[in-house]
Image 1 (tube, helix red, strand yellow):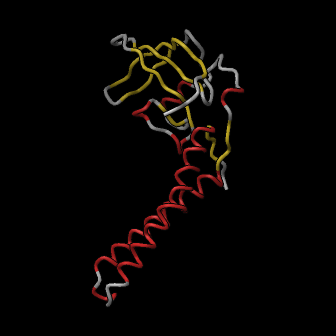
Image 2 (tube, rainbow, N blue to C red; image 1 turned 180 degrees about the vertical axis):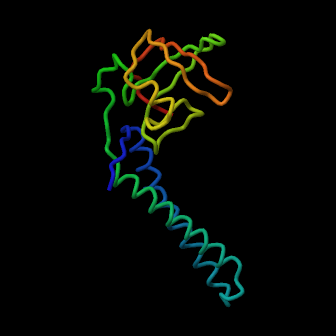
Image 3 (tube, helix red, strand yellow; image 1 turned 45 degrees about the vertical axis):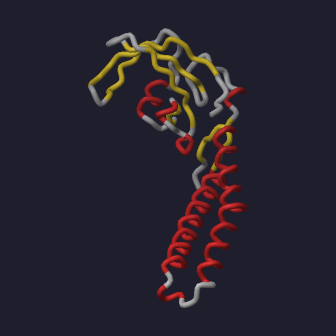
Length: 161
């Protein structure tokens, strides 16, 4: 079993979702199934079929989240030096094309959310950034073509959404 690096924030978020599914959602679906059963003949009971399918999806998600947590290697980025880009670093870069500044935080694959600036340490962008420091420049191949970026700042910022 391969361990997956993850921040404490990501671990807690997944653990909270798992707890919600196990304690609240499971009970709701069990009630839906019981209600549908009370309507009689199960062979022609669409409510029962829908509730059982919903239960199947829920159990798959619970298994998925449990697997994620069992493989998690929680890393506390606040204990790391962020002189160079590393796991948990927040990196501010500036595009040489348009001068636009972008900000990314490098996290585990499971907790990545590019729309929120959380990028997986496995992504091509992270791989290009890792080990770099303020003032370094790098060329990154983007969908619209290559662009050169300068690293403006590397720091640690606690994730919270």
